[in-house]
Length: 311
Ligand SMILES: C[S@@+](CC[C@H](N)C(=O)[O-])C[C@H]1O[C@@H](n2cnc3c(N)ncnc32)[C@H](O)[C@@H]1O
Figure 1 (cartoon, protein in one colour):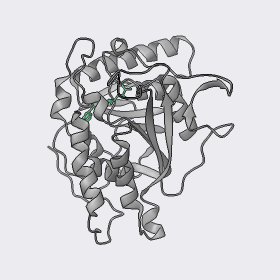
Figure 2: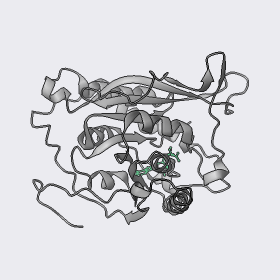
Figure 3: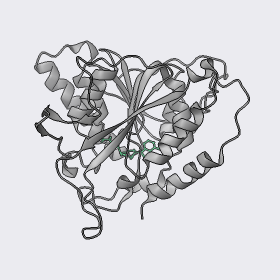
Figure 4: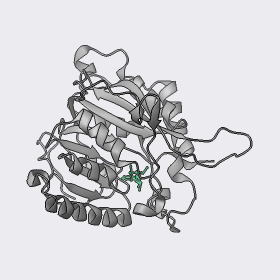
């Protein structure tokens, strides 16, 4: 483990790198204000179910913990001011993540508020088909949610017209929704559709900018970033997902280069195994006395791991 004086600035890692290990150790490598867009999908309840993923149980996941408070703090630290934060969740994990953001954004001076996430909206992916569950006594689960926030005052969305907070194709009246990604496709149970990820990336970043996904899964966010001419830092705990995902990204680069895609941003994919544990950099914006943790937030963050474990 390399130690560094807490005041020494960190040099940003190489763009287009896949980091294998706990995302806490990835965050520890990232300088303050170094990320243009944070788009991620933490391991919420659905992932923890015991369903087979291409007949293979992913054991690394049960060993992992999702430290919500730390995830929010670190997201605020690494995002550039005004930049956007997207966090996939479901109706069970939404309340805790929402509350963790809200708690930190109350009663702040303007200077403090500029450094904190500001909740903006809840985006919805309606799936073109639904999952299973309680077939008799419950409604069929057919949507996933995305918390959309920004660090301080939001930079404008880069979109020709104002995007709807429901993802669909076509015009009102003849719309279609985006399909689920088959588990077998990337040997992963919760891959998100590329067209939705690409829309988020288009609307919330410019060419060449850095997209961070600390919970990368099958590395779909990285693929979407490359397709949009953005660069990425992507973390993933599971070695198998990293290996398959890195292969996927290497193949993508070859295909895009052959198609005559602008190769300016097609470096990598580089791979880095994370060295743990790294010291957590002191967030420079939190010089004021820390506020006492509210009972609401404490309860929400205590309950989240239970939600994540599933019934
Ligand atoms: C919901 S999945 C992400 C799926 C991804 N959006 C996709 O499209 O493939 C969450 C991922 O987080 C990973 N993970 C869980 N705990 C982690 C941790 N502490 N650090 C990094 N990755 C972690 C899991 O291995 C899992 O692949």
